[in-house]
Image (tube, rainbow, N blue to C red):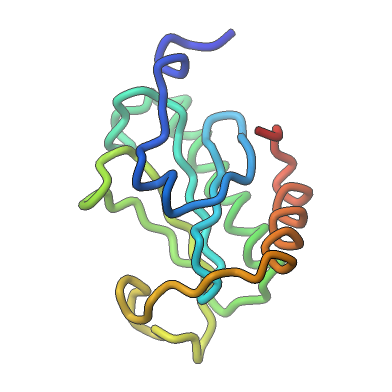
Length: 144
C-alpha cells in the first residue's frame, strides 16, 4: 500500500536535472549523479515534504540507514575506491537526499570535498549503460 506521503512525492527538479534514475529501493529512489569524475549516488526517500532525516519516522530512519549501507557497500565493491563519503546536506536542495560518493586517492578533489573542484564530466553512453546495469543488478532495485 502506498502511503499518502509517498503518493504526493515528487523528485526536486534540480535533482532530476543532475541525475540519471537507477531504480527504487524500499524507501528511496536511487539516482546516479551525471558526473563521471566521481562515482556518485543519491538516495532520495520517497516521502513528501521530508527535509531532514528526523522528518522520517523511526522505522523509515532505520530503513534509510540500511539502504545507505547497502548502496555504500555496492559502490565500494564496484569501484574498489579508497573511501566512501556519505552526506545529507540540503543547503541548495532542501528535499531530503543522501550523497554516497566513491573517493580514491588521486581523484580530482582528494582529500577535499568534491563540490565545485572541477566541472562535471559526462559519461560516455556505453560506460553509463554498463554502470547503470551493474548498479541495478547489485542494488536489486525495482526498475522505474
